[in-house]
Image (tube, rainbow, N blue to C red):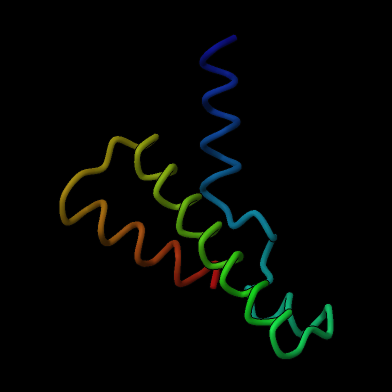
Length: 78
């Protein structure tokens, strides 16, 4: 059961939590502007980075492999 749960978490974390939409696309879809847009984008980028860092930890990545994974994962989400 624990393995199934961990596998499900890894799968969910490996893909951006907002499907294929980037943070910018989501902000535009919500028609945000000004301070609301800035706040949303800041939070969205932070969430994406946290998700990618957790996925890297789950995959037991370290060093350059971790940095590469987190960088590409965050870029996809943002």
